[in-house]
Image (tube, rainbow, N blue to C red):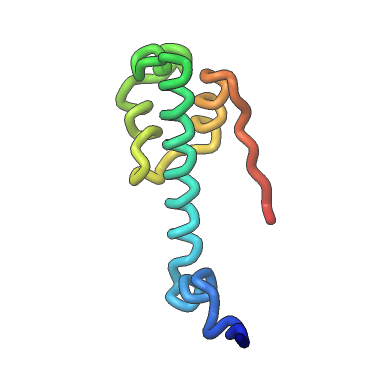
Length: 94
């Protein structure tokens, strides 16, 4: 049986052609980070209030950080959150 090769472009190419690749990628990364922080909080039995105190921020700011649809979070806030749960923020350009 002969296998067919790829037909058409990749999904990334489609998003680039539509002009939304960067926006979609940024939202996806934010969602992953928010979910990872939530998982670590559950693992360490941390409430939002406890984590907000560790980060020296408000609960409202933490809610924005944990909201997967809110992409207006700074790298500094992400780094403080990672440090507050005993993790490191790792980013790279590829």
